[in-house]
Amino acid sequence: MRLHQMIAPGPVRAGALFFGLAAALLAVGCDAPKQGCRLDSDCPGGACVVGECRTVAGVDLGLGGGDGATANVDLATPVPDGWSPDALAASCNFNGDGVIQRGEEPFEVGLGALFAVNPSGMTVPVNNVPQAGVWDFSAPVSGEHETFDQLVSPSGAWWAGDFPTASYAERLDDGQALDGVYRITPTELDLLGVVSDQGGAQETELTYATPIVMLKFPLQVGEQWTSDSNVSGLASGVAFFAQEKWVFSVDLRGTTKVPAGSFDTLRVRMGYTQTYGLLVTTRIIYLHVAECYGAVARVRSQDNETSSDFTQAAEYRRLAP
Image (cartoon, rainbow, N blue to C red):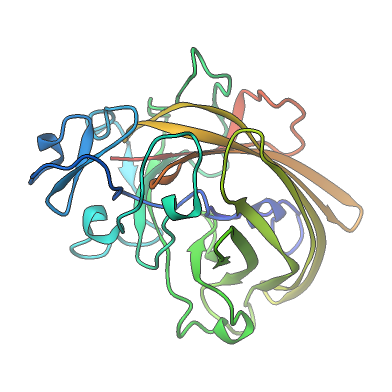
């Protein structure tokens, strides 16, 4: 997931600290009934992964959104030459049982995917209430663009020495040159801090005193946890300090339709509170997580939203074909 857009009006916008966890878990590659194939079209209801068909929940992966409806492509991270989700995604156990185990969410350096995202700074209408068990996020929105999210290695990064346990970094927000730094364990995905692309006088390097537990495995409806921490360091070269509280719950299971197709998902509700001096800012974020594919949608409220069924999204991010 990505720590999305910092909220505070100070050196960093706090909301950004909600990272790309959602963003780049994956593209494809889960074990299931197999048959020989060359193209996704050879696999009705599935995807062609390294010459074998892999089942996809919801059937229509790749059949929706492929009509060029997305307005433009504006890639903060360029798509690598020869990039293929089939080639990058590792195989994982896929059983569609409504419980996502750690082994059903590969977090590997190099994995990435395209996402359709609404224009920065513009809200879009959204329906967070499932209709007959379905969230339909497949339709394009005005001005949306595609962005490529990828998990990158901390090796050689200017900040690597300060995060010796980091597993990968990932872009937090399309409009900022900031990355979330994450650690993977057998049971958790932890957010360690936030860093800028470059070090120097204007660098950003923020560290959580206690890592934020962004995901706890296994994920299943009814699971709840809370993470509290202080975050401090430099933001654009200026000293920064804030307190954060994250309240997580896996509240629903259903089908999430995105431009790339339909997926059997668990919805993770994230309630976010940041205290920056005298300013308190809250947000609600929904992450729609599928086995093996990771976060196929992320929907974030405006600041200080009070309704869980909010109808205007500040961020509307969906897996693209």
